[in-house]
Length: 401
Image 1: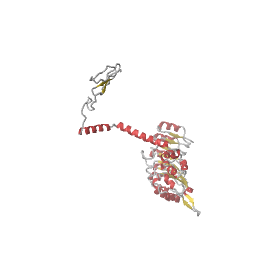
Image 2: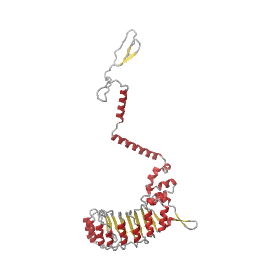
Image 3: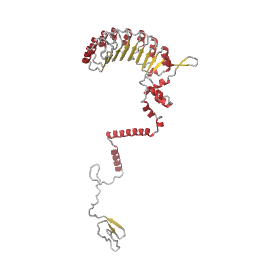
Image 4: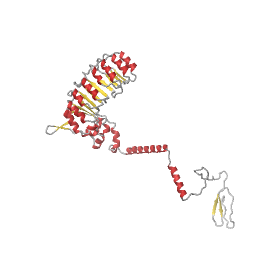
């Protein structure tokens, strides 16, 4: 038989040379295999000696026991747990990615009916709808109403409430103030009240106590608010910093003096027949933190603009004077002297302004980014040269007429 050795009990070992493995027999009738190299086949590779991790040389140290084994295990554990900041950052990134992926998978795994009741999904979905559309969605169910009325969606929305919206008819033919729970739930930061009186404003504040701390801006349009009502309103609404009065003809200049609070930073007054020089003087002296003034008054003269303190780095950056027919170039002289830091200036409808006033503005108000000279018929093409040469930061110029 090729490659096999015959076992013989008389001979201690008898072999037959063969190129393959050889079976040896011993007296104990036990066979062992001896591997011999074959032609064309490389010999077996010997294992490399183990290297010492400390010295880098071959180590044949005996296996540590007792205290030495404990110390070696502690060292290996400390070395295996030591990581670099880059490894930590990579691990954190992988963890966040895995968490985001699991959330996406959880949303994808659910059916449409389940997603429609998932808070995380609804929060993202409602961002794509307008304020009016969210009001419609709030009528689907209580869960959707609670989600749609979250204050995050209504922060920059200003609801308009007419007087008729504030009262409900009762069975005995009377009027009862309507519930404004949904108004408070949405957490509006501003509101516009139309055609209201002093009593209506007080009722609104009493039925919405949260507005005393959350309301930042209030607008009164075509309302019969008096001096007393205006003063009480600004005292009760202690967080209001923006005030608009439009078409309110029942308050006087003295009432404006007594009601304005120093915390007001934005003020808009238009179509109020009792507003004249004394009102602007009250604004200039009672509102040191005023940043924006929008004024439409037909009886304001040039001298009143000199009441504003001359502070080159003052807080006011926006001044809009619309249809102030009595203002002339002398008013622009006062503006340039007292408010050179303005960023936005509008003289729309100030029909007595001429090219000389525009030249003063261009030479002294180099911070302007927006200039409105619409409906100023006395301004000619020469004013454009002053603007082009001396207002390097100007971004918007309005010349409509």
